[in-house]
Length: 271
Image (cartoon, rainbow, N blue to C red; front, top):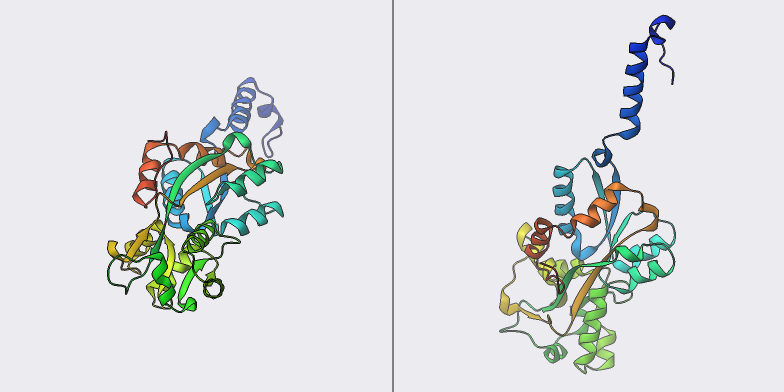
């Protein structure tokens, strides 16, 4: 290492040599885990607001910085397969993280259920708790779900609709949108009469004032259609301290409480 602008005699003195060694050691060691790092967190749309709150909390408590990228689970997984530079993948299902593990794109040992979501049928202008088979009284284009091809909540909603033995032609007319947050927005704005939503989407909407929902407006399928949401550390981030910190802290009690606050359940064995 050379230091520009110092006289040769000074640079060769024992005192300066010690100082130079201390500077080099500081640069190399960098304080261990105190070194700031950055990570990109790919997050299923329903978990957007919670992930943003987690990022804010972790940034306040550590030197790390986080970028939250939001999308439907299927589209995010496809982007990762095609080389998107994400570090952690927070899916709304089990299947896509496992696919990434099978491809060698994610660490098998990092897989964990970080939240269990709840699917519900929100039908605001119906008197009393809605029923699945009563949807047949609506025009199918006034009923909305997240696209089952990309969104796990949409896939769960489609299974619920099929279980109601509704006419195939009626089912074909149901509106599909990119993610479950959009469903909540369309119902809240009156652009859809009814829609299959996540409990977290309604809680987020009520918090920011865009949603007004009463308990009797929603039929919840907590036991019939739980949505296990799995997180995985991507292989490219195995040496990224910010990404590792994120994965580890998802099990910390304050973060678990934040997740519970936003309408999720925890998997068996988690506090």
